[in-house]
Length: 298
Image (cartoon, rainbow, N blue to C red; front, side, top):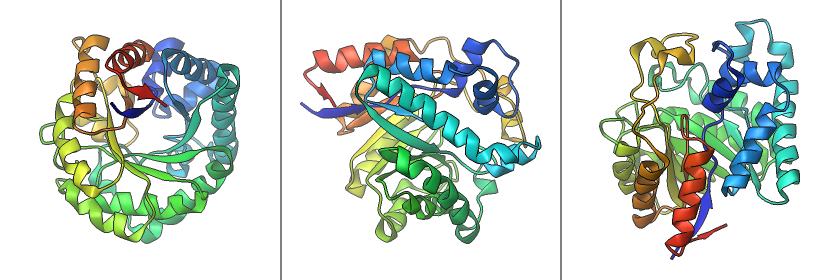
């Protein structure tokens, strides 16, 4: 049986759902500003459900997002607020890791907005330097192209902490990133930079078995955390969208999600959890099923 790191589930969609606020292009960042303590409470719920770690609510805190709303002066403070809420939740729980999240520049699922490594790496290095002293790992999330991966990974080295790299794969062909590039192409990035684990996230769970087959030969600990969206709509792939453009699926019960995740574990995955629209109930049920199957959650 395996030793499993159980990731938490989605933060942004959970915040939007709990707040009841109208979604904005600032998404989870806006809710964190308007509802102090809600991020902490969600982290706490995931820890209580059995998660091994808290993923900081820093995914979308980028200069390019904040500048649109004349809020860039809050860049550093927002990172510290997100870190504080994760630390408060861990302290209340008494154990667990903290993963510092770094998401795509400009927008998610959009390989066409990939910035050159020389331009992207310093932007990620700035964030990594803020997160590094306060987290156990850096979690690079939802990377849509090989070049996007390299820019983020190169910048993440500034954290001084282990780096986990997670890609978003094609919903219809999980062997490819959303750019159409094969997962095997990540080997060039892994050869040049220090990466401790490779994952796939924020794609439909049906695509993840193929992603696991692509990640396993890379020779690092690997895993998956899928989303609960029906699909990524065309309107979401525009500048400054809101999550109103995305629809959650009604069939992805905790029981069904756990079936997918247990398949990934059977393929050798040792890091599993959930992404957008996968909540505490999913993580709790998955934790119970993993333990019942004889796995140990770290």
